[in-house]
Image 1 (cartoon, rainbow, N blue to C red):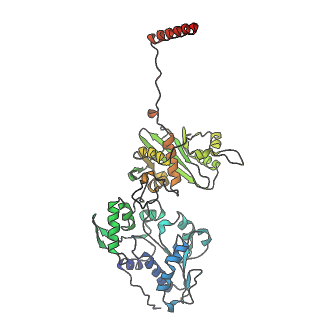
Image 2 (image 1 turned 90 degrees about the horizontal axis):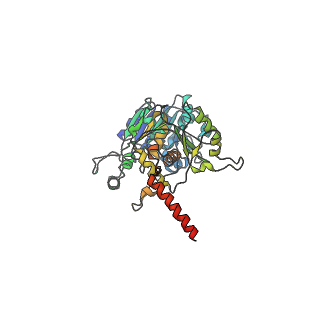
Image 3 (image 1 turned 135 degrees about the vertical axis):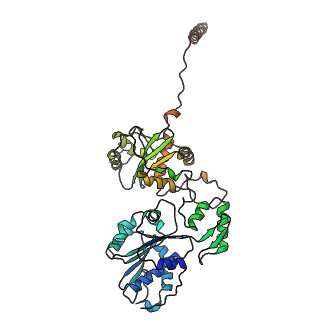
Length: 441
């Protein structure tokens, strides 16, 4: 069936359309990736009759708002079997194929379908594990393909991991422009306004936002703008084994409705070594005690945590810290004057922070823990409170340890004053005079 689709692909889009199998494409903004994947859905629905083809994004309403009209515009009327379903965001073609727009907010409800092609747009926003646990099994029954598309969003998400590590995927990178360190020298997409982009680039240069610009427009995986511990060197993510000759510490952030995070730390002189990390939601403190005791490490000699761990349960009249104490784990907590003060205290240790490959999730915590974006240049961002998100729990545990732990060489003890012979004589004379004075009274 020959159907003329009102779409003239750009060179980079044509490269994707000509690629067989599954792929991952990292793009800058305004590169036309959504237009590209929508037309790939149409093409596959034509070429493979009776197939199911899904455009998938993190937000169903976003798909309705930004993509639904686009799909209808590019889908020729003569190709439609019947009127598009505005409620289900679904079109049925004369080939017997269907194209649907899907959101993954309630991913579990998607299980069971057989899908022939998926276009996953803005994949950096997807929760980790959704593809492997929910979406990938739908392709296994059909031998279908998947496109992972999006603009980078930090280093601690599945989009980054797949681009760097998954060699089964054909990989593409399409920036929006080229720059020379002073100005934008070449626009690479017809969808991009050059004058506006020059303004954005100048603002990034003037206000220290190059990491953000490189991510959004040069399609580079960088740390998110406003990272709290931006001075941490990613080269300090190393192969690091547990050393039984070093002290073992624990740092905890107790979650109520949020995840509880645990860090295993081994201080070594001026170094701080993170050898392991664990976090989980919807589990009581006994679960975490079992996790701690199941590790092949010695008993920790120091534990630090947040003061919220002292809150007692109304039913049991016990607190998480109290239950840990019963299990032989004594958690030190102290109140803090402010979170910014606590963070400044933690900054002193970041330069010599080493993270084991076994604690990869904690590496992602440090790389992605950030302040909220501030539009006004009048506010000092160092005085802001970091975002409360999936990265903040592990970071807070780290900060509680930094706040509560004092290395032995930093413990200040006042030396006891040694009494000389003269001191003793002076003391006797002082007592004699005092007694004489009292008798005079």
